[in-house]
Length: 101
Image 1 (cartoon, rainbow, N blue to C red):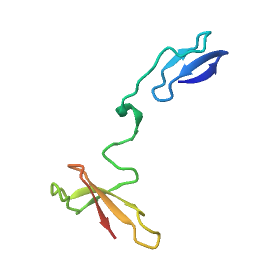
Image 2: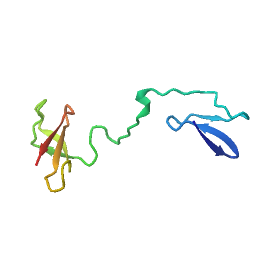
Image 3: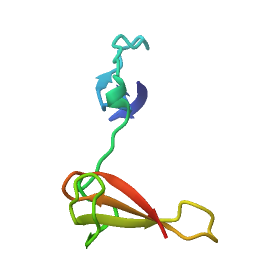
Image 4: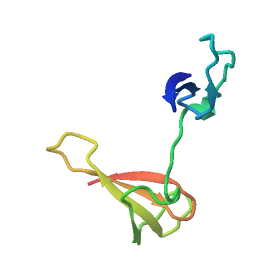
């Protein structure tokens, strides 16, 4: 819990979940909030099916289900003087695989 001043009053606020509690005269926090491992990481995506910056390509065969449509995006995963890596994500089953150029 992190102390903050709001309208002249001291408020304790949890940076993970946003829970707020007004501080009493004695500066002791009485409430203890436990966070599970699931709550520690928050990932927000606009469309969980489409990876960021990805485009749809047809004619690529998914090795898992045989679908011929996938999202693709390119990242530089190795040294700058080596070619980039092309990643694919199947639009049907969601399998992700890579292809080195």
